[in-house]
Length: 280
Image (cartoon, rainbow, N blue to C red; front, side, top):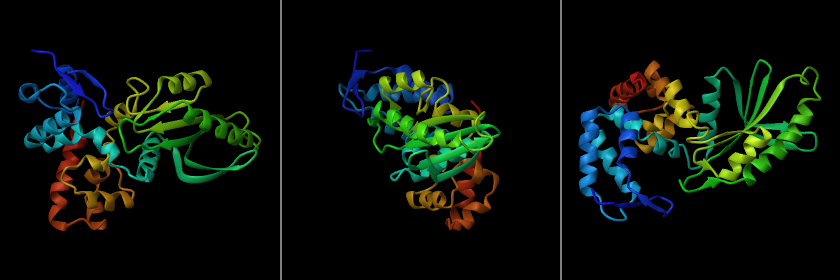
């Protein structure tokens, strides 16, 4: 096949790599036959400079025609962006993610530092482990967290940690700062995080342990994955702190309590169950 360059969301161009499309479709649970069909169709539509966004939309359209379940899992990255635009639902998402790892969590907490008070997005603790978590939500894919972000968070954390460790019984407990973003970190930010022991979590960092990996491992797909929900209905559910498809699959009554149209409840519940029942 003749070499074709695609235009990424950032405006940068790169050579089209069909294996990336195949891998993303496979991760969503598409069958080999469907993957072959979509890959061939996309290949026939390629032209120099075609946007990756157009390729994604076309692949999603074809996948949705075959299976809402698979399409829902395929749009995971876009679904995380739908937790915006304010970032508050993303904080709730991160909080719930940590709670599924056994942490007790609080969001939007004012924490006393040694020098000043700090508003912290998420505080989490489990036994002797305490986490201070800052969430950086971006509405655009090309926005990355540069090294200034972990530098700033580290300075706040040290102020809080100094106060925490002065409290009775806290001196020998573990205290860690996290920075979580729905996009990516620059290489300098990652290097700095490693150097000082700051936990960085992004869409695909750390490798094989990023947000997309945790979601798949814990079966915690956000409700924004559901194509049977419209934008208003997603907002209704998020306001009620119904963040994950698993919540709906386990308790259909949550939909009715959240004011979702009664005629749509069964189809929404069915899609949630199908997404949650898929295994990598």
